[in-house]
Image 1 (tube, rainbow, N blue to C red):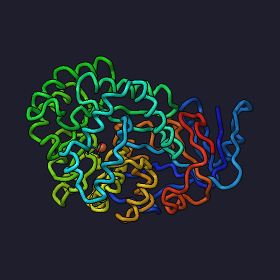
Image 2: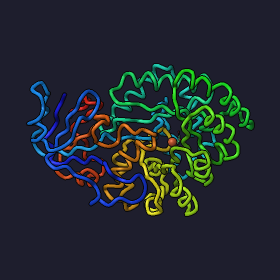
Image 3: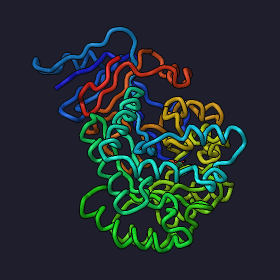
Image 4: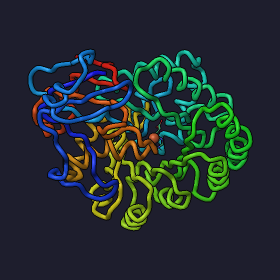
Length: 411
Ligand code: NIG
Ligand code: FE
């Protein structure tokens, strides 16, 4: 057993509703707290002095000096950190006035990364994932969803998913793989998108199941990618096989979130273009709305209407969308803090968006909160006031990160 503390504040993110607004006053705070860990899990949380008196003599005590605040390890529920190459040229073109869609149509965009990723070996992809994931870990992230989607053929999508699986074994934090073979219609299937989908339905989905490569299927529903009706056979088959569905929805045009709701997706991500209609429908549904401020910052476009989603009663998660094209920054805490400022979100709403509500966006109930029986995934900041964390807009990094009861990062 291990006992960590005393913490000036533990913010366990427990007892909060999954949906709707949260006031900062509703955040439970444990003052002078301690966390007792057994193996990978939290054994108990309470007052440090009380816990310290009760523990057995062989308990390892990790005594902290100075003021510390402990939060659940952050969950980044949407990334594309498995890729090769750079899209610095796209970024420069966008900033000189070209749109994401224009660049994509002219041969840049996602297809450029597909070309680079297809050329890369699996080992090179693993190295890239590990490097990026370690940077996220140092920023407090203990679970990262990672999508395929730059392979766009059976063999290349599998290469990506095997790379994600291999990278996971090399990292102390968890990677959650998602198949995004329906990211765009590959050039090899220009004009015949249904044939590409048929191929991934009949050949890829069964392999994903048999090889246990992922239990999550994503699709980019958008003009220039897949339109709603086209994707239905794919989602029908994925549902039939028991996959969880998630959707890149309403990024530039609407339509995606309705599909997400129809297919009872776990989450609908992006939503920058969602109108009152989509906001209401999402709020009524069980689909988690995941805002991706990194893509808004990367593309220089509007943020998802996070405030309106919460006020309508929706569930809001926040993820980095870290990818080489639209969201190259890859800094969840900075982006979540900025979204909070522009969308007028409380500290509680932002922090829930990257902890408890983010784990719900991955359908994971064993993390995202600090509670007996859940994973001992924690990020610790050198402050006695949790409000300092978002106030510093991502410039204030954790001093320690714990994953499954182990200290994995110590500044
Ligand atoms: O989530 N929108 C589609 N997919 C990614 C972008 C990927 C890329 O540009 O390489 C996104 O923003
Ligand atoms: Fe994305």
